[in-house]
Image (cartoon, rainbow, N blue to C red; front, side, top):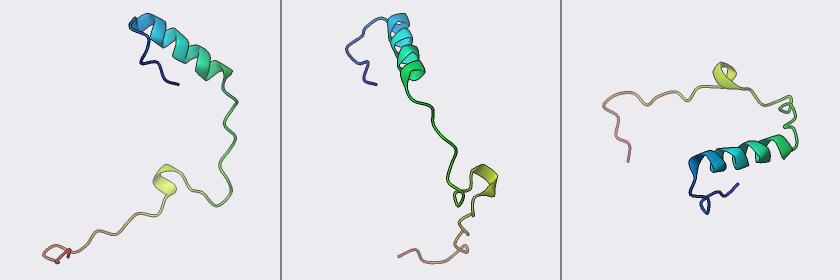
Amino acid sequence: MNTKHVADRQERKDLKRKARKAAPAVGPRPAGVDRGSRKRKVSLMSKGQRKR
C-alpha cells in the first residue's frame, strides 16, 4: 500500500492496519519450500580465493 500522500503518522498507520486486515490471508508454503534454519546454507568461498 502506498501511503506517501499521507503526512500524519497516526493516520498513515491506521490506513496500513486497515489494508492489512482487508488483505486475504496468506496460505501455507508449498511442500518443497523450507523456511529459516531449515534452508540450505550457501557454503562460503575459502579465504584467499580470487573472486573474479
